[in-house]
Image 1 (cartoon, helix red, strand yellow):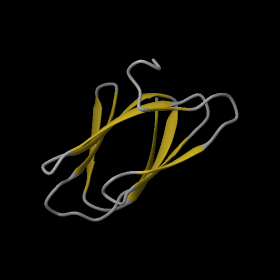
Image 2: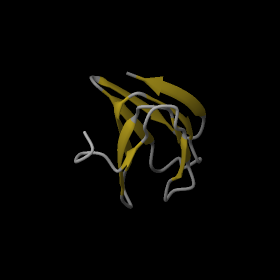
Image 3: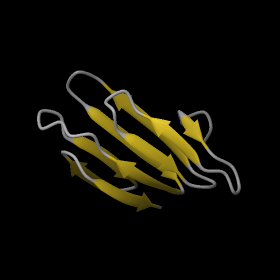
Image 4: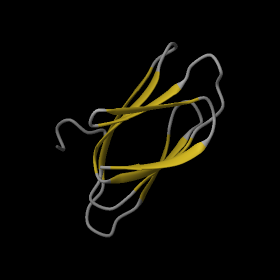
Length: 83
């Protein structure tokens, strides 16, 4: 898991992650996430655990959060996701 992830938390640890587009992710305990940000794409993949997303508004690049077979797309909002 650690080899695939950009960010990992351990037991009882929370981590606030400032993303390049101005969005913020709060990664919950025992969680892992990787991200991909380009001029055309904003994408994060929750590999394990839970996360709360505060998505910066960008109508030209939807923010995609992926967990297992689920993909959530947002233009600017807040939501949580867990697997």
